[in-house]
Length: 144
Image (cartoon, rainbow, N blue to C red; front, side, top):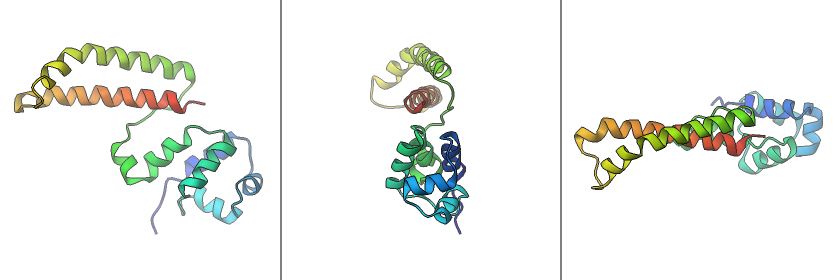
C-alpha cells in the first residue's frame, strides 16, 4: 500500500480546533475515511481538499497537498517555509533583493537564448535564486 503524507490534513483540522467527529459532519466524510486520510493510508481527492481548505480555514493546505502527495508537485513546486505573515513578507523582500543582485547574470546568460557550457554554473545559481523567490511568494500566498 502506498503511504501518503497525511499529517497535513490532521494539522489543518487540529489548527481549526475541530475534532474528527466535528470534521466528519462538516466534510460529509465518514470518520474512518477521515482517519485514513490523516494517517496517510488514503489520499483525499482534490474536491475534498478544497472543502477541507474552506472548512478548516487552511489556505496553505492546497499547496502542501500538491507538494507532498502529487508527483508533479513533489518534483516541481519549490519548498515553502510556512510561517507568520511578517516573516513571510521579510523573506519575500530578501529573496527579491537576491534576484535583483543576479539580474545582470540573468540578462547576460539569456541574451543569446542559449545556456552555453561555461554559463551552466551561473544559470544554476540563477535557477536556485528564482526557486527561492517562488517559494517565498508561495508562502506569502498561502499564509493564514
